[in-house]
Image 1 (tube, rainbow, N blue to C red):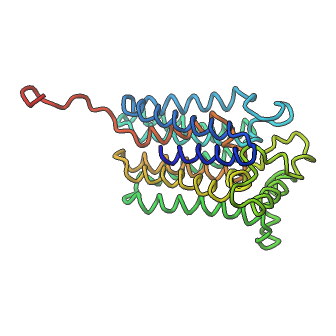
Image 2: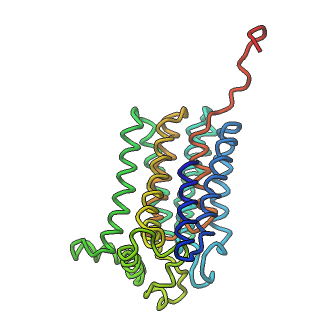
Image 3: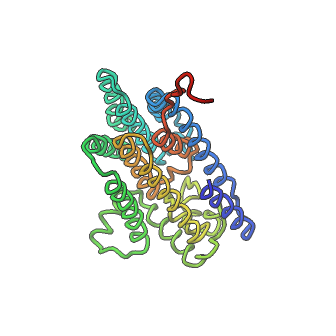
Length: 325
């Protein structure tokens, strides 16, 4: 709560300095906090049913709500905005967590099938990133079944998320070899790298307080010339750096690291903790190269998954008659 409060407070400070619009950041913080609290409560009462329902809801939202896209639905489908991939990733993680939480073989098989459904769903919805991320979560969840020490695995997940963010930053800075940079840039729309470069330029000039939350599109030279731009650089770390400075980037990374720490300390089974960690790491990777965190459904879903994976299942009143009040 201290970290989320710091995120909200820093967005208000930078907004006051530069006349920014912190509402988006405040809404994201509220969504994460509400989702986490709901996940802790529902995960304690219904450790299998709650993530199962969440996985099904994520699939339905990804398929039935193209209006989540920031642009016109006919020009910028939900999958192209990154939200579909994020929802499919979270759905796969929630279904796998539910499968590991149950001891009924038949139910575990059904939940595994639900998790596997996210991969073809990504193909049907035209989200290659969602298909790949869902498959990666499934493979990590299968490997988590034989894991013994969750600390090493979670440290590896943190490094993976950091490498993706560093690679995107390096592409924006032109620090990669031409061949590698060209191969990576070819995976994204033509204007995406230019937006990243613009965000890095703004971050270099305003490393302390940034240009203010919600103001990237105003001083950005690329956004003004990009058709159907939503005023975002489509990279959470670069957006934080441009709008809220290096402290904003640090707070974003600190929240992710705290979630991994909570998964390390949770009393839930190791496969549940590692599966949730893999799904949230995949979400972090998607957020580094898209606008996935710009959607309230995604941020709330991330909080829900973290809450389910760290909840302590309710065991009822274990006191026996005659043993104290």
